[in-house]
Amino acid sequence: MQTKKKREGTVFRNGIARRWLLNSLGVMILLLAACITALSFVVQSYAYNGIQMTLVGRSDELPTVLSSSMKTVNEFNAAARSYTENFPDKNLMEVMAVSRTGKILSTSTGFAPDQTQAMPDYESAMHASSGYGYWIGKLTSGEKVMAITRVVRGANGAVLGAVRYVVSMERADRQITFVVLCLVGVGILIIALVTLSGLYFVRSIVKPIRALNATAEKIAQGNFDVRVKKDKNDEIGALCESINDMAAELGAAEKMKNDFISSVSHELRTPLTAIKGWAETIQSGGVGRETYVKGMSVIIRESERLSGMVEELLDFSRMQSGRMRLIMNKIDLLAELDEAVYMFTDRARTEHKTLIYDEEDTMLSPILGDVNRLRQVFINIIDNALKYTNPGGTVRVAAYEDDGFIRVVIKDNGCGIPAEHLPNVKRKFYKANQNVRGNGIGLAVANEIMELHSGSLDIDSQEGIGTTVIITIPTMKKLETNPELSNTTKIPSVTGRVQVVERKQDD
Image 1 (cartoon, rainbow, N blue to C red):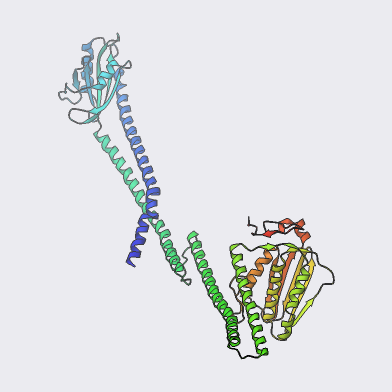
Image 2 (spheres, rainbow, N blue to C red):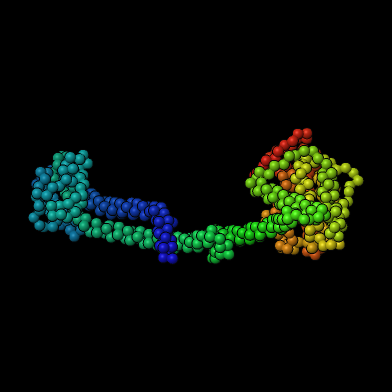
């Protein structure tokens, strides 16, 4: 039991759940990671662009603050110092006045500036035709900043100096990091929810599949009484119903097979016992002529019975493997029916039963059929009719032609077939009455023969009233004008013989 549970757990870990984790969840994690990364870049770009636009906006006020009529460096230096010292947003950013040689003249912080600090934005502004420079980087102190430098030119167009705006990015980066962590947290929450719901869904599939697997193993071991509990009306529920139906069908088939084996064993034992008994009697000697003749008659009769049973079993084997062959020819069906009825005349009289044959006054149209197989069908049906008819009963046989079909009707007033057994009497191994001799395959073989003749074998019965069997077969002319009626892969010719080796496949 522990080994089985361990195996099931391993199957779960390495089976559906693993494939789901590798496929669905893996793809979802990749998509979420891509979305979070993209959103992080968007948030960072939005924040950085906002800060940059703010710095650009402040630099755009320089033409207003610093008069464009300035001509000398001294005038610029004085105006720039005044601008930096009186800058209103000192708590948000730092403003520097830079000479045209790159020396920091004054800052809005009031502290001595670091003259060794590199200023890539200043260098960029000095070489740009727009007089504008932009830079993001770290100071020598390690602080990350964004800097914008705007060159100031005099009235004659000469460079007088520059004004540099510097803002710390630490706070912005903290806010961006917080937003990114929130996005990551949301992504993790989504993955957790999807994982939990996915595992619940996977378990809802795996659990009934385990039950189905356990049931299938029991069925494979021969326990056909086991059933799977159906919990939901979905595809799994439909599969449960199919497994249960399969178990029921296998159970019924197993029972019929066992009954068939028992029946065949009994059928074979009876004639073998008679043959052995009479053979030993004759072998012992000292028997009279009358006893000898009687014994030999029993041996011959029982041998013929054994031969018939073996032939019936061979026919059933051919039917199962699809190798039943018919030698088709143009025949008169009434002649074969006459001979079959005549075979049972003495038996009916001996068993005190009445066998009536309503012969047709007119000839019936010829058909294409196998003489021996059709006679086998007639013998089987008439034999069953007499077998299930009590002494004093009547079996009536008639044949007529109707709309291109010949119908042979064999009707008795015997015990009849119960309604619950009627749909199954043509199934292999099935016997509605276990107390009557027979192996339960005669009707199955007869039905197969009629289908190979493009005909049918229909049974109508009422318990206690009797049974009517209608054998229908198309005439030769009907088959020629309506080839779609043929159940075989070959349509026999009028004059030649054709071996029908297989049934027509359904579309």
